[in-house]
Length: 317
Length: 317
Image (cartoon, rainbow over all chains, first blue to last red; front, side, top):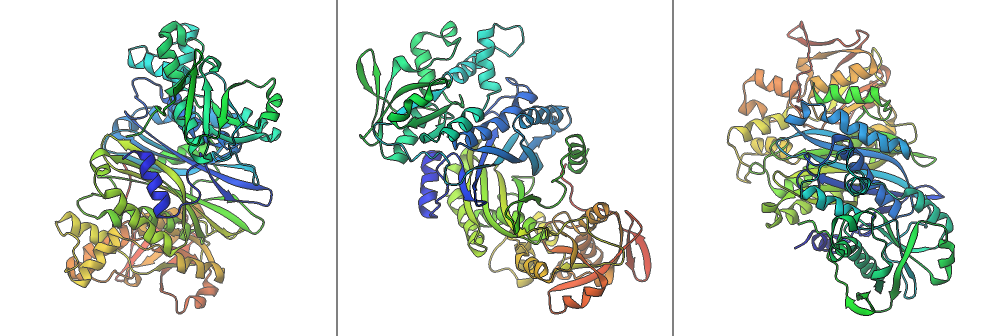
């Protein structure tokens, strides 16, 4: 049983109506809804201390939750940060540097640390970050609103975080004297930037029909949108914006796989009604395909041929 | 450096104004404030799987956070639950039973599970529970409001959870055929009940000047109130309500130590202006002493003699 299947069972058994999107949406004030998201990062599952710095890790622990707020078109407001610390790190300057990274990102987006917990763990650092945000009432981007004919967009470039991970796995370590291309890939993996500015622009334009952040990988996250919206999708390979520097390090087929299935890019994947596509001009977004009526069926077009696109992204467990 | 000292340093360095109480208090609606609390429970630090059941653990993971809401005089509304699960437990019925215990308590208080995260961990179960609640605007019980002359009250009976822990440490295991006294102590440790009803009553009476839940132990938690309020306290030993069954298992001195320093009773410790003490009649609460003007000084009166009372409760790290 995968994590996804387990959560699906839980949703059904206990009639959980607010789970299944990037954030829970709760009534808040007259003009705003409350957004809530939690992300747990576990040592040697989600990160390795030898591959990153305490500052990067503090940054990333917050960034992954801010990305969920962006995926809903919201603005983050506060965070609760719980951290389980092994004795070895407690006795070092790890926590000071971790919080420095955390607050560096928090200041950029006016996120206030309002609480949390700190606990000893026998081994293995664990960080659980809960972030609360706001979105205009009834205007949160959901996974469930895509309609046949809608155009599919992604922001930025894809595969960088997967490329960075591959470099780390094969021995490259972060260091300021690496080439710009290599640094770009490593930073995408270690110090990702949430798409909050773009999300706010899209929210103001009021044209998004469904959205998700690319945390599991394009094929998996597009599959979430298809499942929740009861639609299918067609994606054109040649339209996918590949991360700079990927081609310098990996063969073309591997680059495509990273862009399609690689997780943790934290770019936005979203759909727009076809007659509104013109409003995307000037934004750092790329149209990569279209929503179809073939429920649950994803198709990849490559060199004029059609292939089934399966969700192959990152799975916990 | 203790957890408490570290958090104090963090509060100063980053000017965190909303930490230091049982919950953060944030503006919410016109008539209500939002309460937020997070608690991390770690295997072999906060619990042992051999000593408890998955259902008890699910119950307790929520109960500790509900107790924080009670300590602020609030009403819980929703929860985000993050859980890091080792492979061995993932492959068993552990999670099904854990959530059964969690939802059993959640239903009692209409707490809605709105999200969270689930992740693999290499070893050692980790649970992080965030609970959001509401309290009448400006009416949250704080640790900082005690004034000299206020009377000190506790709810229920003290030392039961510490007694239960001691029994578990010395080999007793939960089983329905134990004596009622023994079961009472074990249940206090394994399946604690938050004081939400009492908190709501006290909130309506509008007479509490400061409050905290007894999670670290009476001596430590009273010390938190004294520090945050800039006052001292005098406590009379013979007034402390000892848990039923403690005396059947432990010598009198050890019972007193459990009632004074034992953690996790999750009863309320609070102060009331002396001219309002009559309003406590009929409530399951006991007056155990008085707030004094001797800032930071706690005194224990035993057999007519005065002793310094030091915070000796549970410390993480």
